[in-house]
Length: 153
Image 1 (cartoon, rainbow, N blue to C red):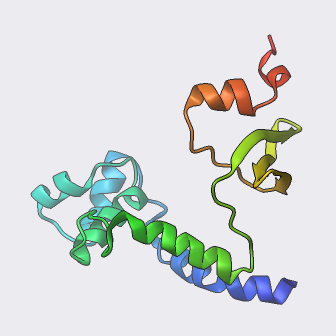
Image 2: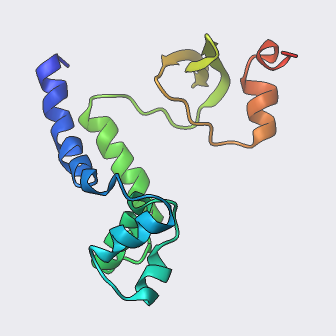
């Protein structure tokens, strides 16, 4: 994508994020009280929603409550999340590989930069800005990451 197309794709994110700007200055116990007072004064509601160190962290549960969600799974259950991810991957014309075996996570300058995996007998390399390991810690550290990376003293 060119610069203008990337910027156009970021506009919804910018619009979403701008709603949080007025809440940035409210942190700590006094800040949370002052920030939540903008929406409701009832101390019982403060006790329910003041579960974070700043007002920004309290906004998501308040938004869920406003929409009657109360942190429940979306309609369709947990399956909706992978379907949404598939939609995004397809929208941006990327590939999806299933039933793969990750061989290793690639590291450059102490940062994960991609993965090497096997799919239908062929080895593939994918570069990435972010790598999320959905496996147990032992497999991650002992099998997927280069051994020399963790032998620092």
